[in-house]
Each structure stands twice: as C-alpha cells, then as structure tokens.
Image (cartoon, rainbow, N blue to C red; front, side, top):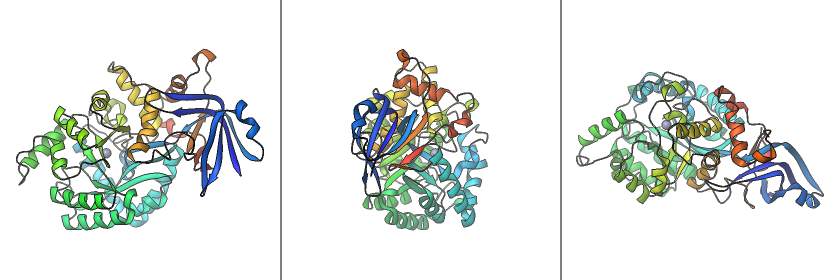
Length: 429
Ligand SMILES: [Zn+2]
C-alpha cells in the first residue's frame, strides 16, 4: 500500500535553492523493503490520489532529507568536551586513551549500540566515520549503524602511543581484509600522515581502490600539524623533495575521486590544484575548527569560496569529538555564524542544509537515490516543529534560521530537536 506524508516540506536543490512547500504532501510507493518518492507537491493539489493509502499526518511539522555527517569519529564520544588547547596535545592526552578502551569487545559493542542509536535520533543517517584501530570495533559499528555510512578503522603505525601502534604489516593485512569484506561501505582510514607510514598508506590505497572502497584521512587542520608532518617526511627516503602536506598523500596514491580529506583549512594554491585535479573531496567541520571558547580546536576558518573556485567538492561534518555536538543543526549554525562574523558572504542556511544532505550523498556517490526529495529517491527524512513565521517571512532560509537558531544558547539541546526520523519510508524514531 502507498503512503502519504502530510507535512511542510524543505527540499534542498542547490547551494542557492531550497524548495519550500507549505502544506505539502509526499506520495510514497513501495519498492523493495521500503518506499520511494512517487510524487511531491501541495496536498490540496494531490488529495485526489489519497484513496487507499496510509496517511502519516505531520502537518504541523516541517520535513527535510536526513543528514550526512561527512567526518566524525564514533570512538571519540567521550572526549567531545575535553579541553582542546592544541590538537596534537588533545589527541595525546585524551583521545588516544579513550580510543584504547575499544580494544575490549564487550565495551566496544555496548558503545557502538549506544552511539548509533543516538545519532539516528539527531536525524543523521549517513556519512563518513572513523573507528579505532580494532577490527571488532569496526564490525560492531557496521552492525549497529542504520543508514548509509562508510566506516574505517584507523591505521596507526608511527608516532603514536605504544598501546595504539600497529606493525605496518599487520595494519596492511587488516585494512586489505576489511576493504575486501565491506567493499564500497569501507573507508580506508590512514589516521593522518603523521601516524601512518608511507608504505602502509601506498599499499593499502591500492587494495582500497581495487575493492572500490572509499579513502579518508585528515589534511591541514592546524599549522603546527603541517610543520610537524612536513618536517618528518622530509627526513624519509623518497620524500626529501615534498613541498606540502598534500604532496605526501599524492605520492602515496591516497588522493582520488573516492577520497575525503578532513578539514583542509590551510591549503596553498598548489595544494588546491592537486586536490581539484585528483577529484578529492573535503569534509569541512566548522564546530571542530571553531575557537576554543566555542568548544572547538581553534584551527581556523575554512575558505569555502576558494575551494569552490577550484571545483573541489565539499560537505559538512561534525568531527565528533573535535566537534562537541552530534547534531548537524549545530554544525550548520556554526558554519553560518563563523562566516557571518568574518563577513564572508554566501554562507546561508540554505547552503548549509545542501552541504549537510545532497553534497554528502554526492561525495558518497549515492545522490541518485538519496540527498533530497526528487521523485524516485528513497523516502529518508527528518521532521522538526514548524516554526511560526508571518506569511511575508515564510521562506526556506527563515524556516531553517528559526529552527537552527532556536537552540544556539543551549547547544546540547540540538540533539533532541529532531522529531520523527524516517528511513526508506519507515519510521525509525
Ligand atoms: Zn577528525
């Protein structure tokens, strides 16, 4: 039987365009084990087709596509609120210790169940996720994740605490095995060039490409990280002449159209050109990059205009635990607020929504089926209370602004703002 969703509808179409349908209806038809969108429009125009259908009445709500969080570490849930004076110090002091706990299978399983139940409730049903070095932690993440996540175990073979350091051969064997097992759901995840040696990066990247897996890592998040990584690689055989952080990844064969670089804040002209040429995408994490007083790492402001000028694809991510909150609403808020403060134009809520939905789907090559409400796509959506606006002010930008700014003074409340979450047309929260 068909389903009809009655709701106000926000449908992100581009950076500049988000269709708003007041008192809308979405007619869903069954396909496989779920539902896809058959028709979308104003309820008053579609009501003749409402015979013999299941009606889901969300007419006091506004729905939008579920979110893609394109960079987060599910194993860093415990360090979100730890002091973040310095990236490398925060990793050493808190993060590595927290990730080490996942070596215990019972603990890892329990945490995976909790985390992935929690993320669904925020309306995020897809994205790119980092796990710890442990094989079972990755298996549990896949077992409990609902939606479209690519996930990878981090590879750590150098400059890491002893308790998290893998032998290069073991790291390579494990990555090859998991990439073969999970194929395009797997993301090969050298933690970053500081922690993964170049031979391991090169060898595993070949296997990942063969298995059609994704690749993700961190690039140019902070200046002291860049100085450190280039200084250690210049001492390595074959890397004496590298000029930039991006050069290291390029030389290791890590850059590709299925590669997602986290952050990319401090990039030179040459690096931007390299990323563009290799079709590498960037995950931008504003709440993690935000100043310390906003609970971030203070890494700087991502230059989205320059990145777009270079035709580099990018999408938003929470970077849990560099970022403090799971909800993509807080990420969108931060993106708009930081750019507004820096007097950068074009960082609208409409753009933020597009970069939290369609852009992620595009980078994961799922945009034919997901990311917005075009007919034929899966019915994956999240509802929020419809804000009150006068007829004159009723448009997509203002609706998003009202919803997103409603919790700006209590950011921990964002996680609970999502009301109903539907995946493949089924209510899962
Ligand atoms: Zn990260």
